[in-house]
Length: 275
Image 1 (cartoon, rainbow, N blue to C red):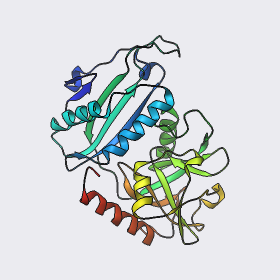
Image 2: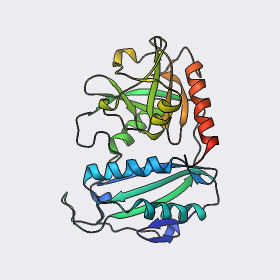
Image 3: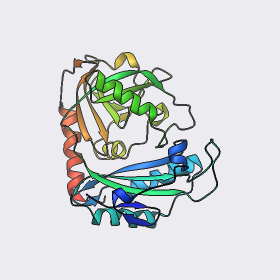
Image 4: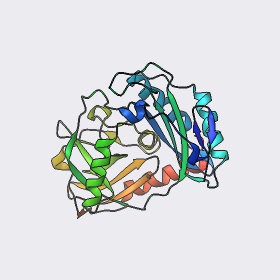
């Protein structure tokens, strides 16, 4: 149980409310960040707030200052009766008409938290819909998540934990809420940002601390046999080994590259939960 921050006030969840005309609800016109609550502290907060600002700028939405958002997060954390989970920061363009045009009022800011724990490994499936790397929202973390919700439901229906998108060019892109790393011909690679994937905070930290190369991976290469080992990265998954692709087991689960990436990321978490 924790309080929820809504537009300047900390309130009980049952008392939290926003306008039914808010464009986060009406049109999905908003951005968000999911931040790891680790040992009672927000991990990589600076990186997440910087990406929130980039996403908001990409949509032309004004956000509160980092100081205001940080203070809101602190207030929510102080009310938590758990020390591991996720913090969600949401910024929308605020109330407006029922059409697509914005209302021009003040943005809405919501901060909430809940306990969460991810599984030890993931099975993934490639969904039959593409990620548009040339779209207006490409690379932005927006609240327009219906395609991700549909893709994740497809994955669950096919016995998987995560759905993987291929982009319109036929290249490996990303998961619904994760980035992907694969080992092909002994090389650890991850799709470049030009693929349309999100600039994941955990992805960047793994590249910085563990290494790897940004390189396009064709769909035809994203199969067991070509891919020797693979893992997902995200705020909540950290570094999560992939056990199977489209129902076919990988040759190595928690292979050497995965093990080293997991170890370096665990060390980073242990060093400083506010990195």
